[in-house]
Length: 289
Image 1 (cartoon, rainbow, N blue to C red):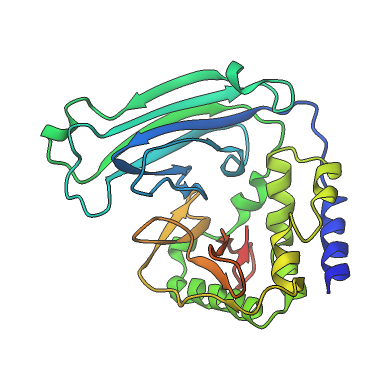
Image 2 (cartoon, rainbow, N blue to C red):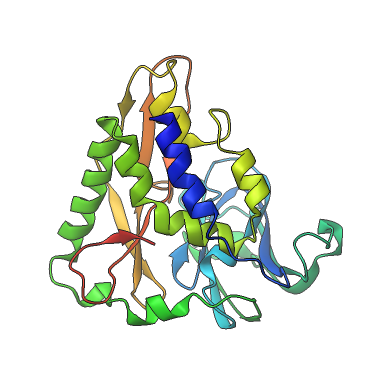
């Protein structure tokens, strides 16, 4: 199976596009005594900062920018778990950054486009939620919007919740059954676009097709893994983005993906997959975007 997974991934890698420029957009989040989730054009970023600890993290945004033009960032801020209101010393500093070229611009030379912070008197407002809106203009060398423009508005599809759960449960089944070939094929579209958004090179992706760097190869081919178990999808919320064309299933509690793969052996933390779903024009089937 390992050889077939590698072959399928190589086919996707060979389709990558080379761009003359490589601009990247990111958000620098510095937070204390609060939890932060970032959405870009309505879609949750795959890495919410929702642990009850202070954190400083750079989140790259290109994956959620399908083409040049107007974009909108939404920053959702919550008190720490178990705390009703923001304390006086809660901190959330948000900085939108731009780098002209991913490969040539060092991180200390990223340009700051705008900044926002929690109000200094947040502790006196007795708030349990605070939201920031950050509109900005992006210029990127790619345009993957045509497919989304033609895709169906998921918010207008009857029984969309049941369809989303059915898709997630299908992915759950093939993961738990060990059908690595079907699982990789389901991700082909997402793998292609994800690599192009961040200008991944064929060399670096081909070099990562091994047991240590590729989750799919490790999960389906490692002899150290005793089983693959994904919890049932409960206590979730549906988040629609990109004008209702794409949806993400996330946990109500920590705002993270619901698709967590627990395995036996020496592994403690689950493998996590972030599946954004869409429905192409003329189709009745949800696919991974």
